[in-house]
Amino acid sequence: MKLNKLVVGIGLVLSLAVTSQLYAKSSAADLKKAASAIAAAKSAVAGANKVGFEWRDSGNMIKKAEQAAAEGNADKAISLAQTAQFQGEAGQEQALAQSSPAPRFNKIITNLRIFSQEIKMAKSAQTVAANAGFEWKHTGKIIKQAQAAADGGDLAKAIKLAAKAKHQGEAAQDQAIAQAQAGPRF
Image (cartoon, rainbow, N blue to C red; front, side, top):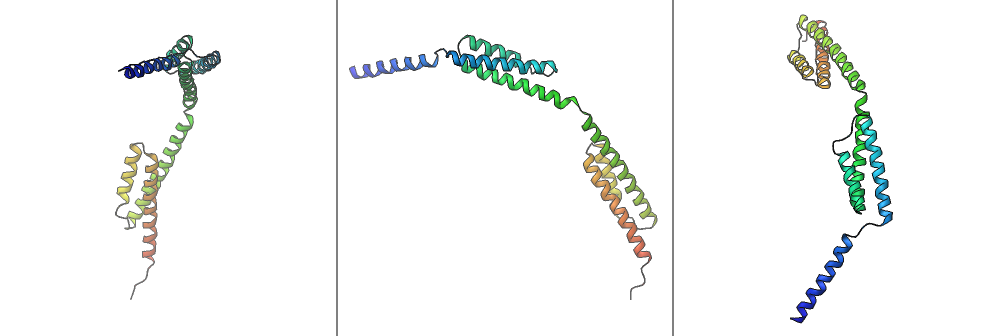
């Protein structure tokens, strides 16, 4: 019985000692690191706010980091400040990425022009092959699929299909010429 009480007493004393170490205030050096992290976070969030892309929780996170530093919990303050800094930097990068949509727009316009040229040439080649009596079976279907892909916004697929239809039309024309010049086979 005495042994049990002794073991329980030692366990209680050790648990209190460990708990006090967990909740001990951070050192002055750790608090300086926290203050530095908070300043960096404020700078990053201010930059994001300046370009209009501050994330929703960044300001609250900085306030919580300042509160944790005031309470002496440097680890929590640093963690919150680093997260807020990441959000501020990500907001600035987001603003930069969305500031010039022109390259994407220009690419879309270029692809539309390419598709328009390819589909015109495919239809022309199909018409010439049909007039010669050598239109291939699936060329019309491929042209319709290309048009449907373009209408659906998949310009890369539409361009490939239109080029395929154009190739079939040209091959049908070549076939018509070869057949016209062919002699009898004995």
